[in-house]
Image (cartoon, rainbow, N blue to C red):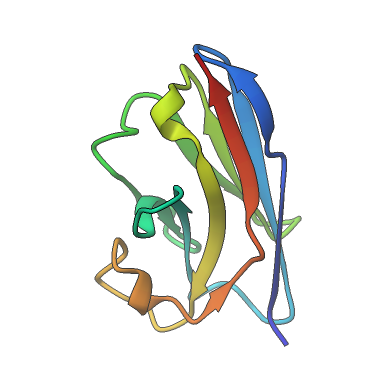
Length: 125
């Protein structure tokens, strides 16, 4: 059974940094796409970033490009989201997600089969 466990959220001031981790287990991830999404109160879940596990291809939402960096540690089966220059509008619950079908639509949440429980990120002004 696939498990995704996020960690690293918290409270930070605007301009600060946080690094989120997503520890994955239960399956071979070589064909997967790993994504980060976020959902703020009263808003729909939105795409943040994604990475193809084997090729390392990376995708970002325009709103985080240049500030966030997604990476993976293949030995540890862990995906990271380094978030710099955080803004109050980055406040949300952040979710890790996995797709094993090699989706082309990495920014579409319906492409992903497995989700973590989420971790809260709060950026104060």
